[in-house]
Image 1 (cartoon, helix red, strand yellow):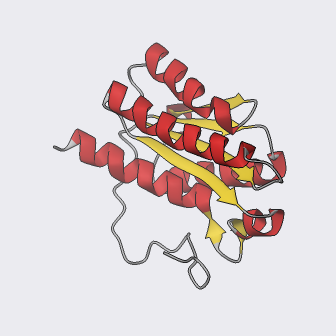
Image 2 (cartoon, helix red, strand yellow; image 1 turned 180 degrees about the horizontal axis):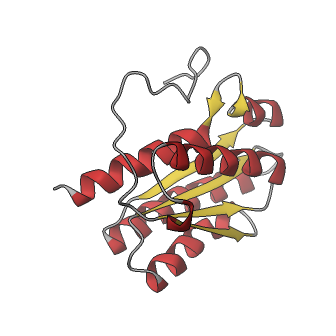
Length: 163
């Protein structure tokens, strides 16, 4: 689905449960910090606006997007009380295949950690062709992917708790 005309932060079409009863982890990559910082701020703000208490949010930085899965694994291994983990990163296309390898590894890794722990692990990673596209999706004209990841985490934590 193209985001050309879509704001990622528009949730008017869906109901978002109250997050007051849940605990969340946010793993954020330090690489491309301008972008990942904006994603983090969006996710944190959205969690709090939807009832999550600040003390129920654990934030952990990791060096880059590749390390997001290990960060999520460590958090879920040490803290069984976490209801969902949000992984935030940004990989921008370069001149080599490095982009493809990183994006594929992170997507598979996030999925595998979620399956291993039977907990929602949310893929909030931008995979863009250039910096402008990343900025557009980190608080720019297409909204903030961090907001989207936070809403997804709340909805999945609620689903998991109420099944």
